[in-house]
Length: 341
Image: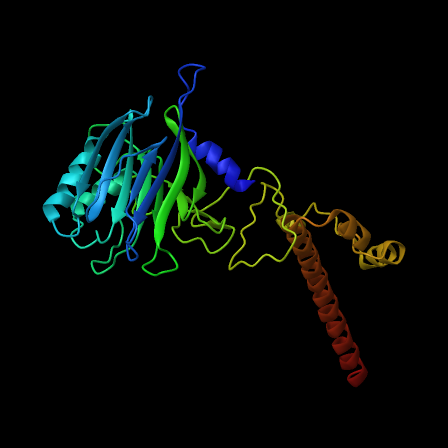
C-alpha cells in the first residue's frame, strides 16, 4: 500500500494535455562484470542501444516518445567523454526523457562535472561514490530539467536508477517500465526508485527492492526508515514495542499540575483519600485498571496525573513534618515541666 502511494505521488508527475494517451513500453539493461550480453535500450519494439564500453545516453521526446538521439560516452577511458556526457545531461529539457545504460566498465574517469549533472537530475548513484576498478551494471531513466542552469539546484527531478554489484549474482541492471504521455511508471525494477532535491547527495525518498522506504536516507534498514523529524496529525497505531532514546510529549498551557501548589487548591485530607480508595480501588483523578485496559492510556496525560499525585504527596509530607515538629516541641516542653515542676 505504501509503495503504491509513493508511486502515484512521485512518479505520475504530469497533467495529460488531452484524453488521447501515448503509451510505450521501455526496457533498459546495463551490463558490467558479466558483459557477454550487450546493453539494451528498447522503446516499443525498437532497440536504440549502440555497442562499446562506457555509458550511452538515449534521449526521447517526452510527449511523443520519438527517438531523438543515442550517443556513447567512454567514461571509463576518457574524462573528456565524461564531461561531454555531463554537458548533454545539463542540456536535457523538461520535454525530454533520458535513459542511460552501461556496458563493460564505465566508472574509471567519471568527473565531478558528470557527478554534479547526475545529482541535479536525481541520479544519486551515478553522482555518488564510485569505484574506478569496478565494472558494475548500471541503468537509469529520468526526466530532463525544467531549467537551463547547470547548478546543482534542480528541485523537481523524477528518476529511476539501478546499480548492481560486481558479481555473477547481479549480472545486469534492468528497468522495465511504461511511458504514458510524458510520465513513466515502474513495474519491474532490480534496485530502487528515488526522488529528491538536486542539491543533496542522496535521495529524499527511496523505495528499495526489499519494499523498504527511506526518507532522507539512501539505505533504509526498516520498512519505513526516516532520517529527520516526522509529524502525524492523526493516530499512529503500533501493534508491537516502541524503542526510543527520547520521547517528548508537549503539554497544553495550564495542564502541568503546579496548580497543586496554588493556595486555592483544595487538597483532600488523607481520610478523604482513604475513603475514596476503599470505594473505588484507585487514587482520585487516576483512571481505574478497567478504564486503562479498555481505552488505553494517554502517556502524556498519565505522566501529568502522576506528577499531580507526587505534588500532593509532597504537600502531605510538608504538613506531616510540621505536625511532627509541633509534637516534638510539645513533648520537649512536657519533659522540661516534669524535670522542673
